[in-house]
Length: 155
Image 1: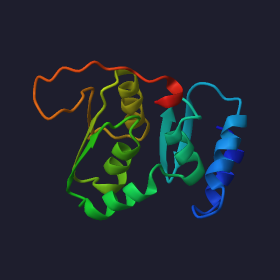
Image 2: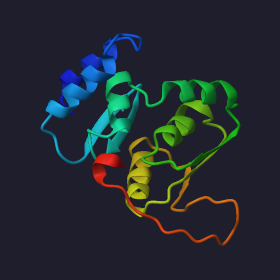
Image 3: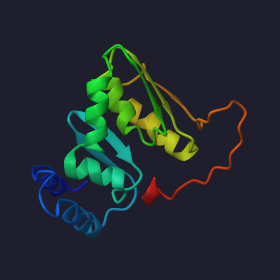
Image 4: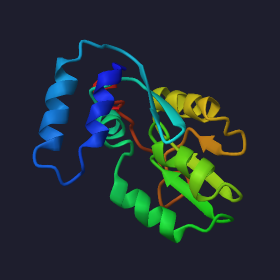
């Protein structure tokens, strides 16, 4: 990832046009394929820099800050965190390292391709105690569903 993109993190969330500027700069980056993003001592590898999760990490250092704040406030350090639809593991990694490091963290990701990224991000952050499963979660056991994988730019 080009280091100059981190300048976006210095713009406050309330700054008018921050996300339009972020999108415009990301579109100008001629970077295809995987990229590693570091934020707050944590690291993630993502399939594409142009996807909204990557954009959030680059521009703010966190993806979905409001949800992260609620989880961090509500989850005890010995708690259990289930990340259903864990994707590349943004919340799973944060839970395992910061939110409930003494608890249980289980991530579920239905896409076999994205599940591999999720597992890689656990290794990248030294999270051996976190469990991730390549499964979809439904309300009943034995449900069958057809899964359609998204392209890399929409992981």
